[in-house]
Amino acid sequence: EPLLDAEGNPVTASTTFTPTSEFGTVNVTFTFDASALAGESVVVFEDLYQNEELVCSHENINDQNQTVEVIGPEIGTTATDGIDGDKIVVSDPEAVINDSVLITNVVPGKEYTISGVLMDKATGEPLIVGDSQVTAETSFTPNQSDGTIELEFSFDASGLEGTTVVVFEHLYKDGIEVATHADINDEAQSVTLVAPPEGESAPGSLFDQTG
Image (tube, rainbow, N blue to C red; front, side):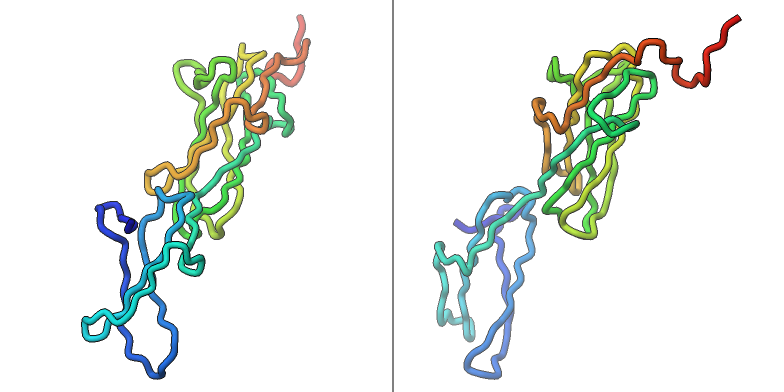
């Protein structure tokens, strides 16, 4: 069936030309919103007219030369301790988790927004610190189709030792979600919170005072 645009109209394109020889090539460009078509195959059908009379057609749904695959953006991530880059985060008031997000198949020159939230692996629910979820967000305009974006989560992890947190990410373009990475069992997205080493000074202290 014809591919329909957001308004329910068939996606079409046309061009008018006057040939200078018996054989040649004409370019026809289709411009449309493919945001919801990831994973689909699109086949181009063509009709040639002269003086508004159809003179020939090319309509073969199985013709590979007329077929293109629509691929959508994908994201994959690695979450680490913002202090030393390992998978263990000390549960202190100034904990930092860095999330390195590999993004592929985006459109260069278009603005995107990547947002993330920390999830409690034990409950499968967002981690709550105080009364709020722990989130991070940044917008970017890629200059190539693949690349890496860094998200930083800063939060008070006091009392959260023993908790494993998993980073979930969502990629948006024009306010529409185009990719997500939300696997509660993904080790690459996970870090574990541990208690500060015994006898460690309180954050911000340079030395212990007595007397």
